[in-house]
Length: 114
Image (cartoon, rainbow, N blue to C red):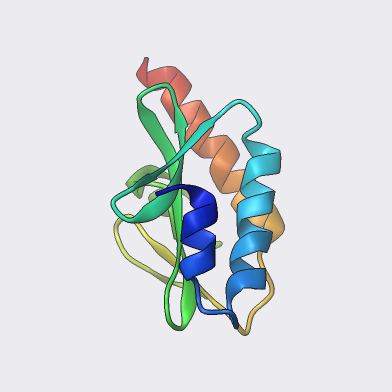
């Protein structure tokens, strides 16, 4: 399955939302590889996942791993989160700057991990 295959399977009411998130991540992660993993679209740096994204029934799911969620807990307080997930409701604007900050933080995490 490719990311284009994944997009085709998304409810047509949510394809534009997913595409906007996917495009933002593509722009932020020009050198990342892309694949489907755990049934979600994913961006990788080498063998390390940077971030996963998925379209659920009522929200976009963003999965940056636990570190960014913990670090940005205050900024994420208006979103439903778990240890590794952020839910962005379809009826809310995409938080572009917050997502950008999360991706940059995650990339920094990966640099220090190697």
